[in-house]
Length: 186
Length: 113
Image 1 (cartoon, each protein chain N blue to C red):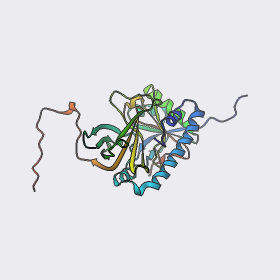
Image 2 (image 1 turned 45 degrees about the vertical axis):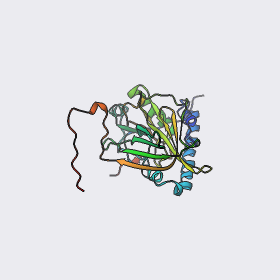
Image 3 (image 1 turned 45 degrees about the horizontal axis):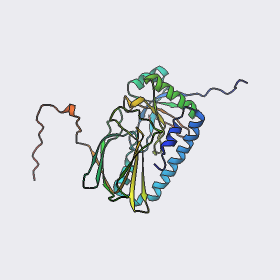
Image 4 (image 1 turned 180 degrees about the vertical axis):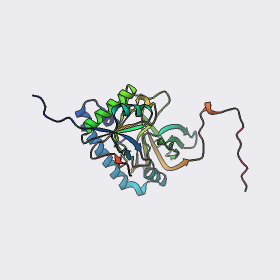
């Protein structure tokens, strides 16, 4: 994370008011700097990234699943956006075509300043940043999770899909009955 | 020497999140009591603490979250233009529950009539 840095977030959370307030001012500056960076690179970002930035917020989205290609460099995140009491959040599929080779892939890091507090297996997205690696000509999407982990996804292409009609079932919801679909007329 | 500063005035309101990238928070018309705020949080609904001093707002939002759940997790605002800092229950249980607080110049929106 270049802007929403974990150590800065940890200082923002300080119980010492003076420390927290100084950090909060730095945080506001980080927001301003990130917006300026996005404004500068926006037209060069792939459509999926622009669409995501313009229409959705990943803050507090729950990470439902990660699908990782074995041979093909594809990486897919399934996230449930935060909803409102009257409207549950949409599920988004973020499908990345990953940069192959030793400078590509996905970097996973653990930030120990942010201790794990969530239940087992649960993680939410705290902050995310898009950027361009000018030297190597690819895009990055960094996601900081509530448990202190960070994913830096290096990609060429991002497709986002809003799953409006699909239903995500947990194993406990699978019942002993038939599930059928109507025939599609061609 | 005793301080002559007046204690900061805070007011607590019901809150509703407006979906979308801006992160706007809309507040109710009339302030609610601390007991109502705690009950609202325990019912997985949002509140917002409003006032001119960030420190007082933050401390009250934290105090209410702790009273409701015995702990808290704090988040800074995201990049949305209207996003406010907030507290969650510990381990985010219940999920999607927030005690927002104003951080002037960032304020909650008043409900349109």
